[in-house]
Length: 145
Image (cartoon, rainbow, N blue to C red; front, side, top):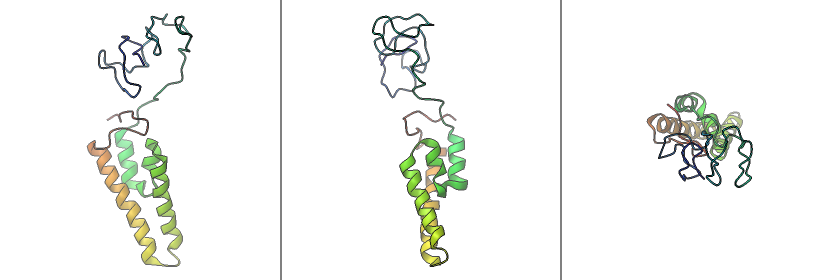
């Protein structure tokens, strides 16, 4: 993949071009696929024929603060992982919590075990998000401060 601003070859997972610092898909001077020069308002690259009107590859970066606060306050439901795109982890946390809630009428000990496991897991992940140990979402996009 090529940076659309400066034509330097960059990784597809790159958040910023190492040469110019722009997000690789944000420029309009070059084709992201072949690196050929393009008209800033072109819809298709005249060199390789690829569509330059690609959907936003990475979307807007997710907020580190929002993810951390979701993890602290309602993280036992996996909401912070769903927000960051980690649907498998979020689903497991949600499943643990739901299992804990379902077991409350039958056995208080097991229900608290499942709920506290999900809550502790979420709290640790929230701290890791806020301190920067978890710094990207599921697509590899860096979290914004």
